[in-house]
Image (cartoon, rainbow, N blue to C red):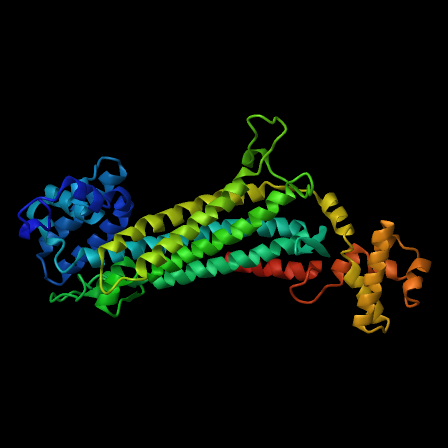
Length: 458
């Protein structure tokens, strides 16, 4: 008989049991559910709401149940619907009447809200730990490439010379923001809802602050309706997952085309590459492609939850059972992608010579040539036009700016002197960009030092 079956005369249809049950996926909340129940039972005993002996028996039984689950000795029942009722049923079978007192002053509505908040808090910490590993790998490679010149792009056209270290620091900034998003999502989840009951609290003298203390929450929910109806913190977590996946996907996109024969900026390690069943020469960046593809999956999880919640009246509705598969899928996908991506990136080999040659083409030093004339006294807009005509002439002659003789340069402007060759060399173009955040090695080192301090504080 269902634990809620007192007012029913007929058993639920077998199809309903299958349709209604969530134990196939919410079983992963067993640890959170047991931990929350231990705290709840402890408080009930301390408050004298149930006999202290029963509370102790419940706590002991729950801990033994947890050990048996983790040892693989427990099978969950579909007809017990969810992880909460499975736990209560299994506990009562083991310890008898005392087990029936566990649910005093509690509803599955505030119980599942508690479990989800505990799960999200753990998931946020897990994501931050993986991001810390990725940031450490980025820091190491960036610091090794402070002076590795490469082309910077806008519109996928070569724009100005930068360094690989500077380029990697851009992704450091993205992932640092991701860490902050997960920290914010954890803060949103760090509010204890137990005591909200089904929607209107309870007449029992619960000590909600004591439960929050036992479970390590920093606060309790302020409204019982919101306590059971709120899933904003899940949305916050999946949004943070989506943003991180977006950043991983952008990075993967660059590594994929850098890995092509046309670019040859990077070579993936064999351990993070795959081959072709028909073309023996192929070495495919499948891990990067899969990460790029799985980004859409996590976006789907976010849209699922936002769509799920958008039309729900207060308070709890059964629709909210559908939040967990989206939550679990986003978490699983993110953690797998972060782990694989970090390993793939850390083992990449960057072709510094090819990057340098790439920066030498496409007139990436044209802006510096214009700045050279400005420093000689020419207005920038006029200098821009002069260099534009030089670039057009070089294109027709298949030359680079540095290929032009001084006489050829003076034909465009008498302000050009011998020092122009040093002024528009790739190394000079990079090293003179010393404003904060720019690619000069000493500026990049400051960014790296900031990132190191950020990581060490996590």
